[in-house]
Amino acid sequence: MKNLLIQMFEHGSLTRAQAHNVLSEISDGKYNDCQLSAFMTVFLMRSITTEELSGFWDAILERRVSVDLDSSGAIDIVGTGGDGKNTFNISTASCFVVAGAGYRVIKHGNYGASSVSGASNVLEYHGVRFTDDTDKLRRCFDSCGVAYLHAPFFSPAMKAVGGVRRALGVRTFFNMLGPLVNPVMPHYQLLGVYNLKLMRLYNYICQENGTDCTIVHSLDGYDDVSLTGPFKVAGPSGEHVYTPEDLGFSTCAQNELWGGDSVGEAAGIFDNVLSCRATKAQRDCVVANAAFAILTLKPSAGFAAARAQAEESLDSGRALEAFRRFVGMNS
View 1 (cartoon, one colour):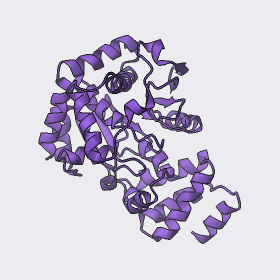
View 2 (cartoon, helix red, strand yellow; view 1 turned 90 degrees about the vertical axis):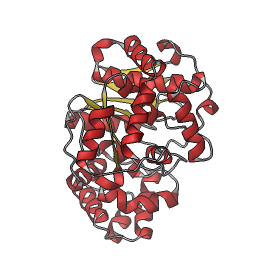
View 3 (cartoon, rainbow, N blue to C red; view 1 turned 60 degrees about the horizontal axis):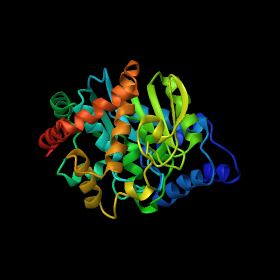
View 4 (cartoon, rainbow, N blue to C red; view 1 turned 135 degrees about the horizontal axis):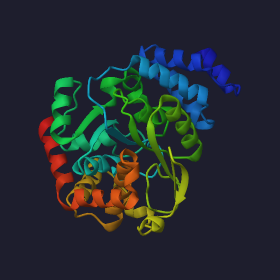
């Protein structure tokens, strides 16, 4: 680690093999918290390279705990986090809207490291107990259309750095890795990123591994379709910049998406969205993200039809019912 740190402090980058080796050693618990903190901090001072990201990705997938789930036709909806916006749980709410519309979701998530409430926080707040029991995951998946994979159960590296990440409280390169290392590796993905450089990196990696991936980035820094201004969407059909009005939404203010100061506050907004008691901005944001997920699965449908399916999922109560079944099977 000392040699690697010196190499990077002198403006060097890691080869793919070096990145693979150091993350494997992190998974094995070889380094102490001070070393891990120094290593992760380097990537806040400069951009990660494609070689480095690919090497880290190789190591995490190599060490992952495999899960025998039928992922055909399933999608993961996930953001990198680390955008510093502290929004409510937009991606997680979108998962249940998509499930309520009749599609299947295999979500890979974790506790928030740089925000108040990550996916695991809001689910645990509702009494969900995470599991790596494949039979239980499969039953839940078949019953309510959602399987949730709590990252530390399936990735030794994510578990090894969890405490350091929470103590740092800022985004690290593990934010970048999380969306890439779903142990089931579903063929479809809606992925939110916090900057355009990362969008290009992810686009390259998704093309390399054959994932049908839609990558979204709001140009004011959100790792979701926030509807707070123009946003960029990259996928198999190319790259496009939209305004909220282009898709029939209104532009909302950033404070309308604030997730609060506690997990309980974020969970309250989450519940309001699924119960159709949310503000227009909160609801529209979830609908927009769910619609892009549906469009990833059914690209011939068109955005208007995908949006209509997302809205019907909420208005009919099917999104809420999917969530209630999920909680009931995982409590």
